[in-house]
Image (cartoon, rainbow, N blue to C red):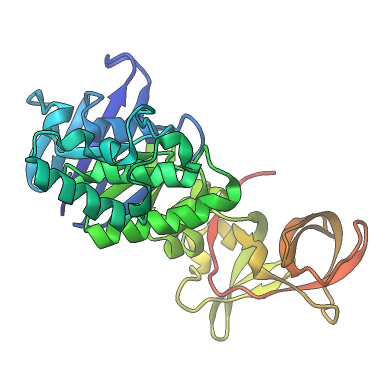
Length: 360
Protein backbone atom coordinates (compact mmCIF):
# COMPACT_ATOMS: atom_id res chain seq x y z
CA UNK A 1 0.00 0.00 0.00
CA UNK A 2 1.14 3.55 -0.75
CA UNK A 3 -0.09 5.28 2.44
CA UNK A 4 -0.45 3.29 5.63
CA UNK A 5 -1.63 4.44 9.06
CA UNK A 6 -1.35 1.86 11.81
CA UNK A 7 -3.25 2.57 15.08
CA UNK A 8 -2.43 6.30 14.92
CA UNK A 9 -3.44 8.48 17.87
CA UNK A 10 -3.14 12.25 18.40
CA UNK A 11 -3.82 13.99 21.71
CA UNK A 12 -4.11 17.65 22.83
CA UNK A 13 -2.07 18.33 24.89
CA UNK A 14 0.32 15.48 24.13
CA UNK A 15 -0.09 13.50 27.33
CA UNK A 16 -1.45 10.05 28.13
CA UNK A 17 -4.23 11.62 30.20
CA UNK A 18 -5.42 13.97 27.43
CA UNK A 19 -8.45 13.25 25.30
CA UNK A 20 -7.59 11.55 22.02
CA UNK A 21 -8.43 13.80 19.07
CA UNK A 22 -7.49 10.81 16.89
CA UNK A 23 -7.96 7.42 18.53
CA UNK A 24 -5.99 4.46 17.08
CA UNK A 25 -6.95 5.02 13.44
CA UNK A 26 -5.83 2.43 10.90
CA UNK A 27 -6.25 2.91 7.14
CA UNK A 28 -4.47 2.37 3.83
CA UNK A 29 -4.45 4.07 0.42
CA UNK A 30 -3.24 2.42 -2.77
CA UNK A 31 -1.11 4.38 -5.25
CA UNK A 32 -3.18 7.00 -7.06
CA UNK A 33 -6.22 6.48 -4.84
CA UNK A 34 -8.24 9.36 -3.44
CA UNK A 35 -9.40 8.91 0.14
CA UNK A 36 -11.92 11.18 1.83
CA UNK A 37 -12.56 11.68 5.55
CA UNK A 38 -16.00 12.84 6.62
CA UNK A 39 -17.75 13.18 9.95
CA UNK A 40 -19.24 15.75 12.33
CA UNK A 41 -17.30 18.79 13.53
CA UNK A 42 -14.65 17.92 16.09
CA UNK A 43 -14.48 14.23 15.12
CA UNK A 44 -10.72 14.32 14.38
CA UNK A 45 -10.66 14.61 10.57
CA UNK A 46 -8.30 17.58 10.37
CA UNK A 47 -6.13 16.32 13.24
CA UNK A 48 -5.61 13.09 11.34
CA UNK A 49 -4.74 15.01 8.17
CA UNK A 50 -2.22 17.11 10.13
CA UNK A 51 -0.66 13.94 11.56
CA UNK A 52 -0.10 12.62 8.02
CA UNK A 53 1.41 15.99 7.03
CA UNK A 54 3.73 15.92 10.04
CA UNK A 55 2.16 19.04 11.57
CA UNK A 56 1.07 16.97 14.58
CA UNK A 57 3.15 14.40 16.44
CA UNK A 58 1.52 10.98 16.80
CA UNK A 59 1.46 9.65 20.37
CA UNK A 60 0.62 6.12 19.25
CA UNK A 61 1.09 4.19 16.03
CA UNK A 62 2.95 4.67 12.76
CA UNK A 63 2.56 6.58 9.50
CA UNK A 64 4.26 5.14 6.40
CA UNK A 65 4.26 6.36 2.81
CA UNK A 66 5.63 4.40 -0.10
CA UNK A 67 7.41 2.12 2.38
CA UNK A 68 9.09 5.03 4.17
CA UNK A 69 8.51 5.50 7.90
CA UNK A 70 7.32 9.07 8.50
CA UNK A 71 6.10 8.88 12.11
CA UNK A 72 6.56 6.29 14.84
CA UNK A 73 5.43 6.97 18.40
CA UNK A 74 7.47 4.08 19.80
CA UNK A 75 10.86 5.03 18.37
CA UNK A 76 10.26 8.78 18.18
CA UNK A 77 10.75 8.99 14.42
CA UNK A 78 9.16 12.17 13.06
CA UNK A 79 10.08 13.31 9.56
CA UNK A 80 9.66 17.09 9.22
CA UNK A 81 6.69 18.26 7.11
CA UNK A 82 8.93 19.80 4.45
CA UNK A 83 10.74 16.49 3.98
CA UNK A 84 7.66 14.31 3.48
CA UNK A 85 6.98 15.14 -0.18
CA UNK A 86 3.39 15.92 0.73
CA UNK A 87 1.47 18.86 -0.73
CA UNK A 88 -1.38 20.69 0.97
CA UNK A 89 -4.37 22.65 -0.31
CA UNK A 90 -6.17 24.79 2.26
CA UNK A 91 -9.76 26.00 2.31
CA UNK A 92 -8.72 29.65 1.99
CA UNK A 93 -6.46 28.92 -1.05
CA UNK A 94 -3.57 31.01 0.48
CA UNK A 95 -2.66 32.50 -2.92
CA UNK A 96 -0.29 35.46 -2.96
CA UNK A 97 -2.44 38.44 -4.05
CA UNK A 98 0.48 40.42 -5.53
CA UNK A 99 1.77 37.58 -7.70
CA UNK A 100 0.41 36.55 -11.08
CA UNK A 101 -1.28 33.17 -11.45
CA UNK A 102 1.83 31.80 -13.16
CA UNK A 103 4.08 33.09 -10.37
CA UNK A 104 1.78 31.62 -7.73
CA UNK A 105 2.05 28.19 -9.35
CA UNK A 106 5.83 28.59 -9.68
CA UNK A 107 6.35 29.63 -6.05
CA UNK A 108 7.32 26.19 -4.75
CA UNK A 109 9.64 25.33 -7.64
CA UNK A 110 11.79 28.47 -7.78
CA UNK A 111 14.98 26.36 -7.59
CA UNK A 112 14.29 24.74 -10.97
CA UNK A 113 16.00 26.20 -14.05
CA UNK A 114 13.89 28.94 -15.62
CA UNK A 115 12.95 27.02 -18.77
CA UNK A 116 11.98 23.91 -16.78
CA UNK A 117 10.02 26.00 -14.30
CA UNK A 118 8.08 27.78 -17.04
CA UNK A 119 7.32 24.50 -18.78
CA UNK A 120 6.06 22.99 -15.54
CA UNK A 121 3.81 25.99 -14.82
CA UNK A 122 2.39 25.89 -18.36
CA UNK A 123 1.75 22.16 -18.08
CA UNK A 124 -0.12 22.48 -14.78
CA UNK A 125 -2.19 25.51 -15.80
CA UNK A 126 -3.20 23.60 -18.90
CA UNK A 127 -4.07 20.57 -16.72
CA UNK A 128 -6.41 22.64 -14.54
CA UNK A 129 -7.88 24.47 -17.55
CA UNK A 130 -6.47 27.90 -16.68
CA UNK A 131 -3.68 28.45 -19.20
CA UNK A 132 -5.40 31.65 -20.33
CA UNK A 133 -5.15 33.19 -16.84
CA UNK A 134 -1.35 32.97 -16.42
CA UNK A 135 -0.81 36.75 -16.32
CA UNK A 136 -3.84 37.61 -14.20
CA UNK A 137 -3.90 38.28 -10.46
CA UNK A 138 -5.84 36.04 -8.03
CA UNK A 139 -8.59 38.63 -7.39
CA UNK A 140 -9.41 38.57 -11.10
CA UNK A 141 -10.45 34.91 -10.87
CA UNK A 142 -13.58 33.28 -9.45
CA UNK A 143 -13.46 31.22 -6.28
CA UNK A 144 -13.54 27.98 -8.23
CA UNK A 145 -10.70 29.15 -10.48
CA UNK A 146 -8.62 30.21 -7.48
CA UNK A 147 -9.09 26.76 -5.96
CA UNK A 148 -7.76 25.16 -9.15
CA UNK A 149 -4.75 27.51 -9.07
CA UNK A 150 -4.09 26.41 -5.48
CA UNK A 151 -4.28 22.80 -6.67
CA UNK A 152 -1.82 23.49 -9.50
CA UNK A 153 0.59 25.18 -7.08
CA UNK A 154 0.42 22.19 -4.71
CA UNK A 155 1.11 19.79 -7.60
CA UNK A 156 4.05 21.79 -8.97
CA UNK A 157 6.75 20.27 -6.68
CA UNK A 158 5.48 16.80 -7.68
CA UNK A 159 4.40 15.63 -4.23
CA UNK A 160 3.85 11.93 -3.64
CA UNK A 161 0.59 12.70 -1.81
CA UNK A 162 -1.77 15.66 -1.72
CA UNK A 163 -3.76 16.64 1.38
CA UNK A 164 -6.85 18.83 0.98
CA UNK A 165 -8.57 20.30 4.05
CA UNK A 166 -12.18 21.40 3.40
CA UNK A 167 -11.10 22.60 -0.07
CA UNK A 168 -14.53 23.75 -1.25
CA UNK A 169 -16.14 25.02 1.96
CA UNK A 170 -15.94 28.70 0.95
CA UNK A 171 -17.63 28.11 -2.40
CA UNK A 172 -21.28 28.24 -3.39
CA UNK A 173 -23.18 25.01 -2.75
CA UNK A 174 -24.01 24.56 -6.44
CA UNK A 175 -20.31 24.80 -7.35
CA UNK A 176 -18.94 22.36 -4.76
CA UNK A 177 -19.96 19.03 -6.26
CA UNK A 178 -18.99 20.06 -9.80
CA UNK A 179 -15.59 21.31 -8.65
CA UNK A 180 -15.06 18.16 -6.57
CA UNK A 181 -15.55 16.10 -9.73
CA UNK A 182 -13.18 18.38 -11.67
CA UNK A 183 -10.48 18.12 -9.00
CA UNK A 184 -10.86 14.33 -9.00
CA UNK A 185 -10.32 14.28 -12.78
CA UNK A 186 -7.25 16.51 -12.44
CA UNK A 187 -5.71 14.31 -9.73
CA UNK A 188 -6.40 11.16 -11.73
CA UNK A 189 -4.89 12.73 -14.87
CA UNK A 190 -1.82 13.72 -12.86
CA UNK A 191 -1.60 10.32 -11.14
CA UNK A 192 -1.40 11.84 -7.67
CA UNK A 193 -3.03 10.21 -4.66
CA UNK A 194 -4.86 12.39 -2.16
CA UNK A 195 -6.44 12.45 1.26
CA UNK A 196 -9.31 14.91 1.57
CA UNK A 197 -11.22 16.25 4.57
CA UNK A 198 -14.80 17.45 4.07
CA UNK A 199 -18.06 17.64 5.97
CA UNK A 200 -20.11 17.39 2.76
CA UNK A 201 -21.27 13.90 1.74
CA UNK A 202 -21.87 14.87 -1.90
CA UNK A 203 -18.27 16.13 -2.13
CA UNK A 204 -17.05 12.90 -0.55
CA UNK A 205 -19.02 10.73 -2.97
CA UNK A 206 -17.92 12.85 -5.95
CA UNK A 207 -14.20 12.65 -5.08
CA UNK A 208 -13.44 9.52 -3.12
CA UNK A 209 -12.34 6.08 -4.24
CA UNK A 210 -12.56 5.19 -0.56
CA UNK A 211 -14.30 7.14 2.20
CA UNK A 212 -13.79 7.10 5.94
CA UNK A 213 -16.48 8.09 8.44
CA UNK A 214 -15.01 9.41 11.69
CA UNK A 215 -16.74 9.86 15.03
CA UNK A 216 -15.17 10.88 18.34
CA UNK A 217 -11.64 10.40 17.01
CA UNK A 218 -12.32 6.88 15.76
CA UNK A 219 -12.61 5.65 12.19
CA UNK A 220 -15.98 3.91 12.10
CA UNK A 221 -15.67 2.59 8.54
CA UNK A 222 -13.19 2.91 5.66
CA UNK A 223 -14.92 1.74 2.49
CA UNK A 224 -16.29 2.70 -0.91
CA UNK A 225 -19.37 4.91 -1.11
CA UNK A 226 -21.70 2.09 -2.14
CA UNK A 227 -20.79 -0.02 0.88
CA UNK A 228 -21.05 2.93 3.28
CA UNK A 229 -24.58 3.55 2.07
CA UNK A 230 -25.86 -0.01 1.63
CA UNK A 231 -23.69 -1.94 4.12
CA UNK A 232 -22.87 0.45 6.97
CA UNK A 233 -20.62 -1.23 9.54
CA UNK A 234 -21.97 0.66 12.56
CA UNK A 235 -25.15 2.34 13.65
CA UNK A 236 -23.39 5.73 13.53
CA UNK A 237 -22.41 5.28 9.87
CA UNK A 238 -25.97 4.21 9.04
CA UNK A 239 -27.33 7.37 10.67
CA UNK A 240 -24.68 9.72 9.28
CA UNK A 241 -24.81 8.67 5.62
CA UNK A 242 -27.94 9.53 3.66
CA UNK A 243 -31.49 9.96 4.94
CA UNK A 244 -33.10 7.20 6.95
CA UNK A 245 -34.52 6.02 10.26
CA UNK A 246 -34.38 2.93 12.45
CA UNK A 247 -37.61 1.10 13.16
CA UNK A 248 -38.23 -1.90 15.45
CA UNK A 249 -38.38 -5.22 13.60
CA UNK A 250 -38.16 -8.97 14.10
CA UNK A 251 -36.17 -11.52 12.13
CA UNK A 252 -38.06 -14.75 11.56
CA UNK A 253 -37.50 -17.97 9.65
CA UNK A 254 -39.41 -17.99 6.35
CA UNK A 255 -39.75 -20.73 3.74
CA UNK A 256 -37.06 -19.13 1.55
CA UNK A 257 -34.76 -18.20 4.45
CA UNK A 258 -34.65 -15.48 7.12
CA UNK A 259 -36.82 -12.41 6.63
CA UNK A 260 -37.63 -9.31 8.64
CA UNK A 261 -41.09 -8.29 9.82
CA UNK A 262 -41.41 -4.50 9.94
CA UNK A 263 -44.27 -2.00 10.30
CA UNK A 264 -44.10 -1.41 6.52
CA UNK A 265 -44.11 -5.06 5.51
CA UNK A 266 -41.84 -8.05 5.18
CA UNK A 267 -38.24 -7.60 4.01
CA UNK A 268 -35.85 -10.24 2.78
CA UNK A 269 -32.32 -10.19 1.45
CA UNK A 270 -30.90 -13.68 0.81
CA UNK A 271 -27.30 -12.48 1.02
CA UNK A 272 -27.46 -9.88 3.77
CA UNK A 273 -30.32 -10.80 6.08
CA UNK A 274 -29.00 -12.22 9.39
CA UNK A 275 -30.43 -15.33 11.02
CA UNK A 276 -33.10 -14.94 13.73
CA UNK A 277 -30.50 -16.11 16.27
CA UNK A 278 -28.37 -13.03 15.58
CA UNK A 279 -30.42 -11.06 18.13
CA UNK A 280 -32.31 -12.15 21.28
CA UNK A 281 -35.71 -13.35 20.11
CA UNK A 282 -34.88 -12.02 16.66
CA UNK A 283 -35.69 -8.51 17.93
CA UNK A 284 -33.66 -5.82 16.17
CA UNK A 285 -33.75 -2.37 14.62
CA UNK A 286 -33.83 -2.20 10.82
CA UNK A 287 -32.53 0.73 8.78
CA UNK A 288 -35.09 2.14 6.35
CA UNK A 289 -33.63 4.74 4.02
CA UNK A 290 -35.75 7.28 2.17
CA UNK A 291 -35.19 5.43 -1.11
CA UNK A 292 -36.38 2.17 0.50
CA UNK A 293 -39.93 3.57 0.87
CA UNK A 294 -42.04 3.87 -2.27
CA UNK A 295 -45.22 5.93 -2.61
CA UNK A 296 -47.98 3.52 -3.69
CA UNK A 297 -51.64 4.53 -3.36
CA UNK A 298 -52.68 0.86 -3.78
CA UNK A 299 -50.68 -0.25 -0.74
CA UNK A 300 -52.60 -1.22 2.41
CA UNK A 301 -49.90 0.48 4.53
CA UNK A 302 -50.76 4.14 5.06
CA UNK A 303 -48.68 6.97 6.52
CA UNK A 304 -49.34 10.60 7.40
CA UNK A 305 -47.10 13.31 5.95
CA UNK A 306 -45.57 15.21 8.87
CA UNK A 307 -42.99 17.26 6.92
CA UNK A 308 -42.00 17.76 3.29
CA UNK A 309 -38.90 19.28 1.73
CA UNK A 310 -38.81 20.20 -1.96
CA UNK A 311 -35.62 18.93 -3.68
CA UNK A 312 -36.40 19.85 -7.28
CA UNK A 313 -37.04 16.50 -8.92
CA UNK A 314 -38.42 15.04 -5.70
CA UNK A 315 -39.84 15.70 -2.26
CA UNK A 316 -38.32 14.30 0.90
CA UNK A 317 -41.35 13.28 2.97
CA UNK A 318 -41.19 12.57 6.69
CA UNK A 319 -44.05 10.17 7.41
CA UNK A 320 -45.75 8.78 10.52
CA UNK A 321 -47.36 5.34 10.47
CA UNK A 322 -50.58 4.64 12.34
CA UNK A 323 -48.53 2.49 14.75
CA UNK A 324 -46.39 5.53 15.61
CA UNK A 325 -43.16 4.69 13.77
CA UNK A 326 -41.56 7.34 11.59
CA UNK A 327 -40.15 6.71 8.12
CA UNK A 328 -38.84 8.89 5.29
CA UNK A 329 -39.47 8.67 1.56
CA UNK A 330 -38.18 10.22 -1.64
CA UNK A 331 -41.24 10.92 -3.80
CA UNK A 332 -41.29 12.39 -7.34
CA UNK A 333 -42.11 16.09 -7.09
CA UNK A 334 -45.25 15.79 -9.22
CA UNK A 335 -46.71 13.79 -6.27
CA UNK A 336 -47.34 17.01 -4.36
CA UNK A 337 -49.34 15.96 -1.30
CA UNK A 338 -50.18 18.17 1.66
CA UNK A 339 -48.80 17.97 5.18
CA UNK A 340 -51.33 16.01 7.23
CA UNK A 341 -52.45 13.92 4.24
CA UNK A 342 -52.39 10.10 4.43
CA UNK A 343 -50.73 8.29 1.53
CA UNK A 344 -50.03 4.66 0.67
CA UNK A 345 -46.46 3.39 0.98
CA UNK A 346 -44.61 0.12 0.59
CA UNK A 347 -41.09 -1.07 1.28
CA UNK A 348 -38.76 -1.84 -1.60
CA UNK A 349 -35.52 -2.81 0.14
CA UNK A 350 -32.63 -4.43 -1.71
CA UNK A 351 -30.21 -4.40 1.24
CA UNK A 352 -31.51 -5.31 4.70
CA UNK A 353 -29.43 -3.56 7.37
CA UNK A 354 -30.08 -4.49 10.99
CA UNK A 355 -28.57 -3.53 14.34
CA UNK A 356 -29.12 -4.43 17.96
CA UNK A 357 -32.38 -3.03 19.34
CA UNK A 358 -31.99 0.28 21.15
CA UNK A 359 -34.67 0.85 23.80
CA UNK A 360 -37.02 3.73 22.97
